Each structure stands twice: as C-alpha cells, then as structure tokens.
Image (cartoon, rainbow, N blue to C red):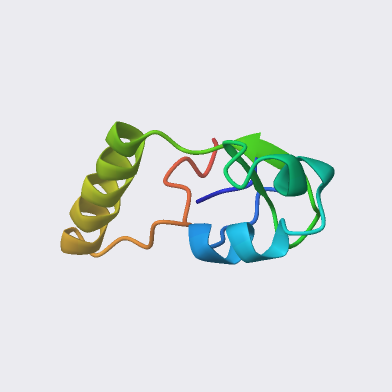
Length: 76
C-alpha cells in the first residue's frame, strides 16, 4: 500500500499494528482507517480491486524488465 501523504510504500499489516494508539481504535476495533507507519497519516483501506490492479501492473512491469518505481517519462 502507498501512503497518500508521504508516498512511501508499506504493508497493510504494519499499518494496522501501528494504529493501536488511535482513539478510534479503542472505540471500534476496525474503524476502517489505516495509519502510515512512516508519517502517521490515517487513510481508508485500499479497495481490493485496486490491490489487484496494482499487482497486475507490477507483474507486467516486471515481465517487461522495468522496475515499478522507475518513471519511463524522462522528459524532453
């Protein structure tokens, strides 16, 4: 998953464990928000269809020999 605020990638499991200090966590065990372990930004869970699209995109980039973090638009 990618943080909408800082842009760093993290596993959803990491976000859930780092979100235990939130007041919403104590009121409801599953508030529907995930907290970025890097910056603490709270955001909704990524929908499953987006996760599947991301996985397919990364697999196709890997099959073509591209790194998912490289930008093919070098400008010019």
